[in-house]
Image (cartoon, rainbow, N blue to C red):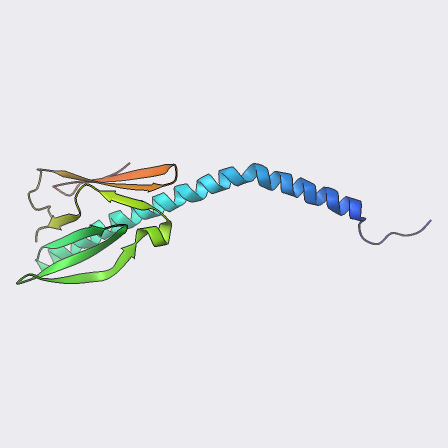
Length: 148
């Protein structure tokens, strides 16, 4: 009897077919999980930008704003005389996470105390969507953040 080294082509083919079938079964779950993580990451980024705007307003004792422009978000500080300074960079949420952004207000102003200008009068809703996954962030005039 001859001693065999390695595997036969048929054995390798069976293994590849089994691995392929398992990959096809797992693909939808993995894809759904990646979309969900992208939306969650974008939500966390929006909440972090709001916290940054609030902290800057209190620290600088000047109004700041969280601004939404298309699928991007950024923080600006009012330096007086109509001059705005962008704090940090512009976050391209679509480029980074693949999400679409829809905000009920394009600018959320915060006064020097870190409260929304016109506090208590309105709630801003930011909707983040990617394919079938969606998430919202609600920010009250008093600064209460609710991520849903």
